[in-house]
Image (cartoon, rainbow, N blue to C red; front, side):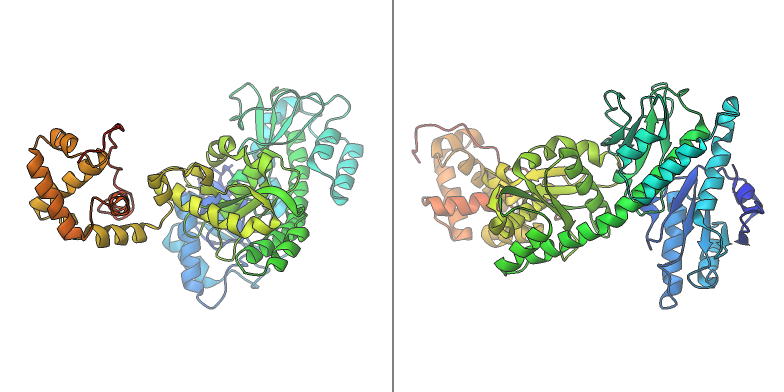
Length: 522
């Protein structure tokens, strides 16, 4: 289906506002409905984007329109359909931005439901697939009425899926993008490890379209291992019902998330009574043990971190948990210790559902009960900083209980603080233009790595022991430290660990420690 086919559909009454003939011949791969001001991360190449323009306002309109359309263009969207109900018409700022970025745009009249547009796209796409099922390509009327009733009373996806394929249901799995099984038909057997591409296992995989804003990690997919088990039109109708089911779940989840956000605010305060009350509002018992997780996905990606964390927590299946945001926007979760133990193995496959986004997380040590959650949150945030430092180019989850060495502990210190400590402690030894300073710094590294042994340091550096003595005295002079004292040695060792690369972000690899010996001779 091309963009032109959709714009020319008289039943929709779309109002073309700007386009070029060549752009109208582009193929439509799907539809995304969003009212985010920066929706690019949720848009797939080839998709039509539907927006009610709730994000737009006259104040700063041109800038907002420019960012919105530029994001669509970079994400590979093929056209924008803008709802006219919110502002009475499509703002001129938005039309001009679309023209600048070669993005076809049309207005959607207030009386046209977005659902009608998505139905038109998917029915046209799947029509060719279901021709050989002519006459058997729709839900029976009594099943349709049953499913509508289930949605109206907000039944869960498992109940809806069980009722959708009477009387002999085929194997079918409802999965999230991250591979979590949301529901399955009775007797469906083991679910796939991840969402299969259509036809990759001989089956069929259909996206569940929904008007709810869900992150890529939480998108639903209906997978049937046997592609011939149900006609495409039937699957379309079932996924449409499942989409309404997900919308209802998202609406109910908002109240749960508000309670969790309240807990996040209490955890960053100093009132123990508020923490206890907020935990009760989230359904958390006073006694644990609990662990806290903190996660982020970089600047302006709080929704993605929250979605990834919620999906990971969902895959561990805790009896009770709270997932929300801290006042600064960082995603967090409180969950029982036994469930938290399963986070590490599920974190990579969850993050793989959106490979272009780096989500880092930190996990606290266990907290005996609700009273210890503020401290556990501090640990989780520290572990989060360590995850960002040790794996800046890949998603990672760091466990605070694993920070058992000095170099591991220091990874949670902000890069700026590490660099400042290193500069103030090592002083002129860090001068890159001074060759003698570089020699002294190297001597310090080897001396500490060999546990302060003069002889082994001299051997490692191919120097006379007297030369090592001279250099150590010079180091003590420049740093004001006495290398005969353990506390000063530790300070200098920490300063070496805190050095950063020239870009200021990555720590310099730790000096290699020598094998311990029983001798402490200097």
